[in-house]
Image 1 (cartoon, helix red, strand yellow):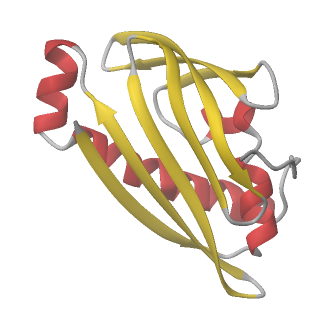
Image 2 (cartoon, helix red, strand yellow):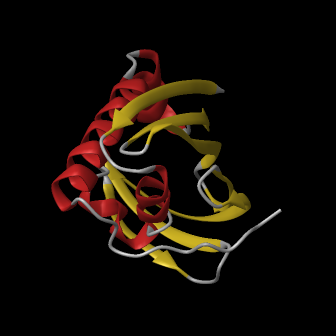
Image 3 (cartoon, one colour):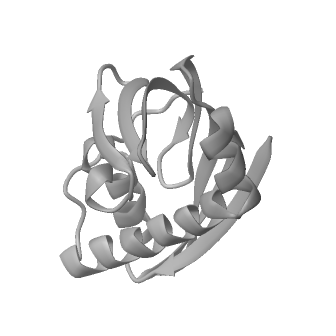
Length: 150
């Protein structure tokens, strides 16, 4: 099991960063390797990914969601096994620290080798950097879901 922890400071208020993160269908715009995310219910998403020629489809369930604080998930079907949490920390009125923790179990030779070479960590860091660019360029969220899941 690989554990990755990354964080980034974004130049938007905490509610803006949080609201955008709840727009899972926008993830392909800043997450490399994510082709499509479908929000099937308030707590169930379906993911289609392709990383280094490896195609995966899986479902992830939101296990905890607290507005402006955290979103946690775990996979519930498919070959991909992961769980994670993203937390949002208000730094001031216009800055937020976004922290991502991910537990990931490589599946197959390509993922195992990529994991050993630090690919997951680099990809996570890159995805957070692209999220920063995405939300700061927009200056506002494209939507938001403020429901609570506990």
